[in-house]
Image 1: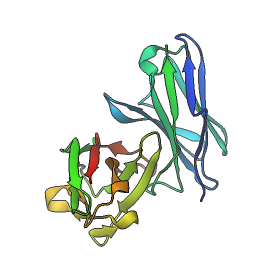
Image 2: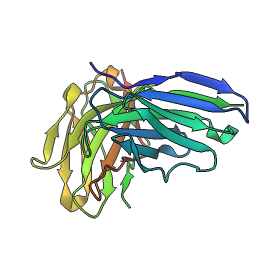
Image 3: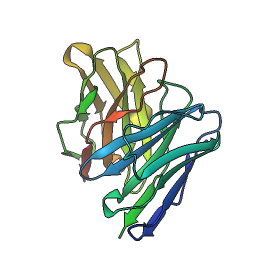
Length: 113
Length: 116
């Protein structure tokens, strides 16, 4: 089965460091989403792209987070500088088109010390 | 803005018993509705979806859900649960606007515990 691949699976780093998370969407999917999951807030949408163009990033703290799609096979989410409150599991998901089911990766578990 | 409410944070069911997980949504038009399941340390797996048409939808692993517009509900059911069904279940609503693709709005989840 085709899968969304996220790397790294786990990341532990110190406050202030830059963090980059990567996502390879399912081949042929034109829509990519980034979500964050925490115990307190649950699953929150951070940003999403369609055909590599950013459509909405209103869920992201703009001053420290950035999301890009350098090409159709790679999406990145960067945090600079990182803070302890950024500790969460970050999920990438992709879908074939709008309204179609989203397929999730296994997530990146991020811990900021 | 759309929202999803899953009223039950935890549910405990005996193995072999029937299951119903509740989900209520708020959205101005006809929504796209989904149920996902998450096992510990894993991503979310799609169980089933409702886009239009028949209001009773069948999913994987023996799950089904019924869309009731009058009640703004999309409850998940299974006639007989197995120990392997123990997991976190999320209801989600999606919509489209301006030809773009909106992300999903998730409920807080229901933690399902299966008793032997």
